[in-house]
Amino acid sequence: MSGGHGHVGIEAVAAGDTLVHRLDPRVKIIGLVGLTIVAVTTPVGAWAAFACYGLVLGALSVVARLPGAYVLRRLMIAIPFLLAVALLPFVVPDGVRLALTLAVKATIGVLAMVVLSSTTPFPQLLHGFERLKAPGMLVMIVAFMWRYLYVIGEEVARMRVARQARGYQPRWIWQANALGQTIAALFIRSLERGERVYLAMVSRGYRGGTATALMPPLVLRPVDVAFAAALVGIVIVARTVAV
Amino acid sequence: MHIPDGMISGGTAVASGALSLSTISASLVQGARRLKERQIPMIGLVAAFFLIAQTIHIPLGPGVSAHLLGGALVAILLGPWVGCLVIATALLLDAGGLGHGGVTTLGANIALTGIIEGIGSYLLFRVLATVLPRTRRGFLATTAITTWTTALVASAVGSALITYGGSLGAQGVLPVFATVVGLQAVIGIAQATITTLAVGAVMAARPDLMATRDLLPASATAS
Image 1 (cartoon, rainbow over the protein chains, first blue to last red):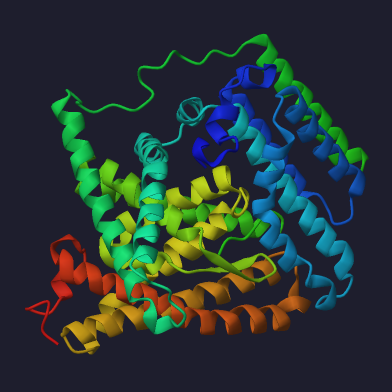
Image 2: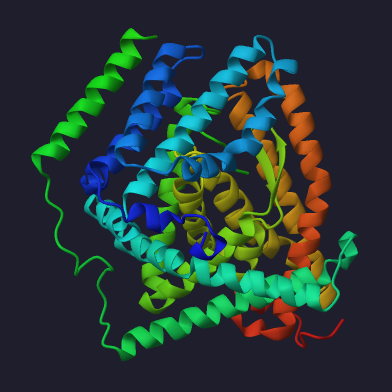
């Protein structure tokens, strides 16, 4: 996830400056989540409709200049689910159509979220959700979670190296003791760090308020409305005509 | 369990979404009343920890996978409301940012992991703890049984959601239940083991942090 792995990270891609990146986050959230909902409720075997949704997402990716390798890499996370769905044809009558439809729906869902998260820097995303009436406390929790995700991820990696350096090569479940202790240590550290973070905030003058209070206000522009209208139009056509 | 988009019907998604939404709202209200603002960074951090722990998973069948660490750990250590918030926010980011599980199935996934494995674990734990001996071993045994049971129930409900309430339909009931619940029963042993080891380690290091500390033996090291 971090840049140190030699491949592009989410925030680096999200920091781009294309038409899609500049769209209002609220419009993108509602549009892409809405697209996913429509795709999911599309009946089995409506290949033309699915192709439409895929084209829309593909077009957005192209305009946003998302790197192909990056998008593929993120789509690959869905593969375990797709493999499991591949078992369906043997289990259920008319399974092949169903399996393919489910695979397509799952992929569309993942791709929609990839587009959303890759064209909207995280603070903007939070701002969008907050303006869409998400509870302030929840937005704050998500903000902290995102901020410390990489920190905890690196701690996990360090602990793994430390275990291996001490000759830990578990094979059987009763050898999982060190794993349990690692988890406990991470948990306790997270709790204590959380306390420290709050104290640090208070000692720097924090008196309540949300993370996005200081950001420039979101304003809907004509291009945002045009995007929303176009998306709605295409999706309605796909859903009703192409079925 | 992370059900991907498309595996449950619209009615199921809406119903489970409403259930999860009301539970999260209740947790937030409880949080505002009891926890106060100072706990918000802590919840975010534990959610980050839980999110990373969730990434270790084994696919069990169509749309179902077993996670090495389930909601039981968080609920037993932090209580039902905080546990539910931690799990819900982690699943939110899972769906939106990591592609684990669908956006339309968030309600169902939160219901499975947050409500059944989370709040359910806390309740089951409390009930079992009154029956089992109040020793360190008793505490850990309660943890293990709770973890295994709630994970199994969650897998059963999840199977019901994707068959009766979803795309696999009623004809898929037998094979889905057989594979998913059957596999979960076996993998659940590993999950219960790891959760119990982790809880044991927290008990030894910082028992004062645990929400269930009132159920701990008088001396945390007494067997």
